Length: 139
Image 1 (cartoon, helix red, strand yellow):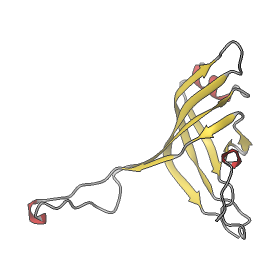
Image 2 (cartoon, rainbow, N blue to C red):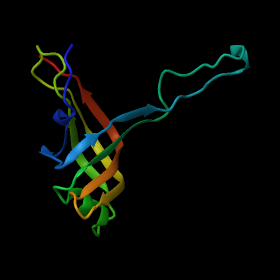
Image 3 (tube, rainbow, N blue to C red):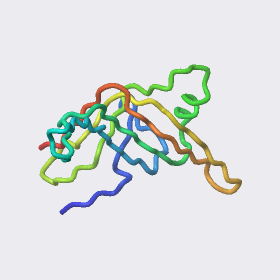
């Protein structure tokens, strides 16, 4: 079994790494559709499809780029980051192409911390908007 270092997971915009990310968490959720009726004898019945699927990605790190700050505080009300790609480190050594997830995300939360004797840090949440595409790793 192969384990990987978290720093090898990359979050990119237009093929450029979003600088400074130290922690990235990917949360998937798919809202269930309950179709239980009286004929189901009190046993819940769910459709296979989700009513809504979404990816949320809390991120935090060291401020090395103004990209997220500009997106948050800039004059534009558009908080959409287009062309985001998440690349995972390879898990199965025979494979040479890593798994990726790509799509558009909206910055829904952002904060900065500036302790007087440490680096400026940031945290935020990216939420998927529109379809996303997962490509498994391959040989």
